[in-house]
Length: 101
Image (tube, rainbow, N blue to C red; front, side):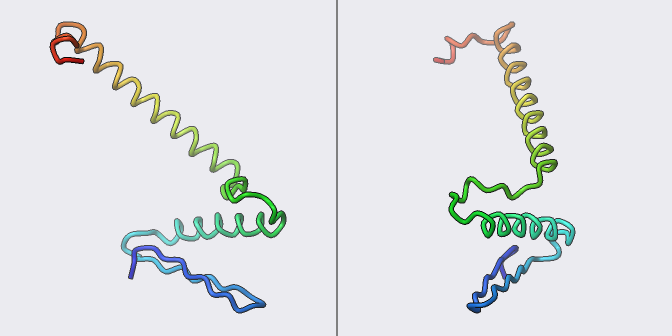
């Protein structure tokens, strides 16, 4: 079995979704949260089927904001690390010209 697999069965009048996952890799709460995202996406598509798929939201606004804030903090941390690294090289380390940069 794959570590995380979604099976979709179309029975004309109904659709069944079967989600299979390895319990040693995923917590049940995480899988339930992912199913909530899928449910939200399916409801949005049913409400307005004429939109492009990338125009639908599948995350609750609060969670999307948390993810974006985390990404912004990560980017700032990476930027500070790169800046610190460049500062160390330029103050006493070999110059950029010595490395052919």
